[in-house]
Image (cartoon, rainbow, N blue to C red):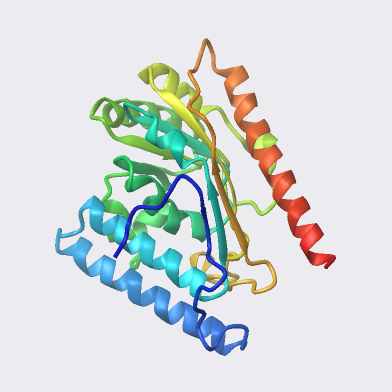
Length: 269
């Protein structure tokens, strides 16, 4: 199974799709069933202590391929920026859905060792918890910003010093609409103190919607199937990092505006 993709990747037009594609609600049931099979297999390995980074990336790859078979069309750019890095970095980007949590490990871990800053609710999850805990993430509550800051800085410095990169979503929660005022500077503060570079990333993953009752198991939107990931060039943090944080926000806003424009043009055809 190939686990390396080029610097840019676009889902091939001839990608095979589930025969249940677009046959709601059967299509949604088939997707969730297949996704949970991947997740439960990963959970079993993690509980047994047999879930290294390579297996994590493989599980992530399977989810990405499942999403493609369900009609998702991926457009990934900027992976060359990751390959240029000579040491660990802090990844900073927007957070939209479960999709990026499941697919980012494949995109990044094929190039460098990485972990995430995650909410404690994910760690407590029966299904996802063991998998995430096996990655030794930085766990925050999102209820006490001061406490979260101390934890991210303290643990983040140790992780980066050990050669492992960190992914941070500065927003307080997932948002289908990007709100810059919720985008804190925690990531650039960590990078500045650690003396490492930042890789900004932007994503549009609303193909996989948040669930009404189980947030991580929402439905797929067959009419909104374009999935975008873009990784920017490495940035050096200077001073307080205020200017760099502003540039990261602009990077995200610029990509989202472009992708939204493409979707609008496509819907007019």
